Amino acid sequence: MPIASEDGVFGPATEAAVRVFQERRGLVVDGICGRQTWSSLVEAGYRLGDRLLYMRNPYLRGDDVVDLQRRLGALGFDAGRIDGIFGPDTDRALRSFQRNAGLSVDGIGGATTLLSLQRLRSKGPEIDPAAVRESVHWQGTPTTLAGRRVALGESGGVNAFQRAVQHELVGQGAIVTLLSHPDTAILAGQANAAAAEVYVGLALAAPGRGCRAAYWGAHGTVSPAGRRLAGLILDELSISGAGTDGPPVPMATPILRETRMPAVAVELGPPRLVVEQASIAAAAVGRAIARWVDGPCLDLT
Image (cartoon, rainbow, N blue to C red; front, side, top):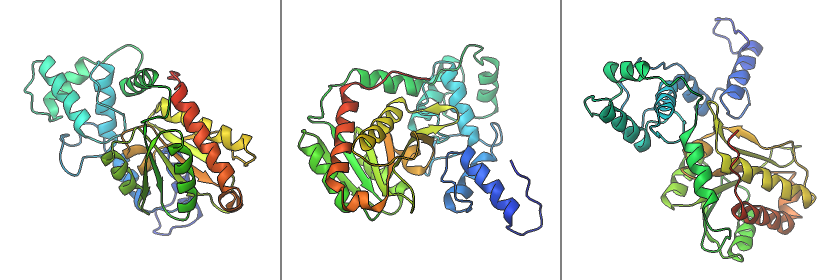
């Protein structure tokens, strides 16, 4: 990572360092230390043992929580997605570990619990229980959109396109919830509250950009179902004549990190795609989701 001098000036070297950090953390790479980047910088500063870890409101977040989740998962205690958020799944896994290790079951990751985790550290290959569970779950679900709960979110500017995609999905029997809010973290909460089985976020791409898609991926883990859906959406958009800017990418933006179901963030571009070819592109997104439920992939690599 570029080294910025400590001169109190946000110059080219500092901007370059911010961009590298954003890329490594799966954030939007814009060189701006906004709210998301600053929060990620704070989280990156925590190491396991720096503080007590437990479930509270708002949830604790940080790289120390990532380490705790990874260690629990390696020992067979499913802490949910390795996302650095100490929520109910992590609390449940920690209490289960404490119970099995003969420790006080208080749900607190303190010195005694962390020492036991270190002593029992798995020497085998690392497995992401959440990714395995997601893949197995989707492999065993119906291969039709009929009755499936789909959340379509947008953060401004693509309401008409969102409704066009809804029309395509409802025509295939899906139960579609439309969500709209400029704050994607709030969109994630709304999707969770709606008990959606899959979330697709729609947004306008930056000027000069083609279509892009992202799925959850950070800390060496990914959402297999989200990755496959992102690929299918870009594939169908490309077949329909839309330009795409490369393959789908793993990211850890709030909408992908905080949704509790497979999620994809799609950027649509150029603008004429949303205006002049809305019906064609919306049909492509609908076909992609139909293909996705017809056979989710079990690839965990």
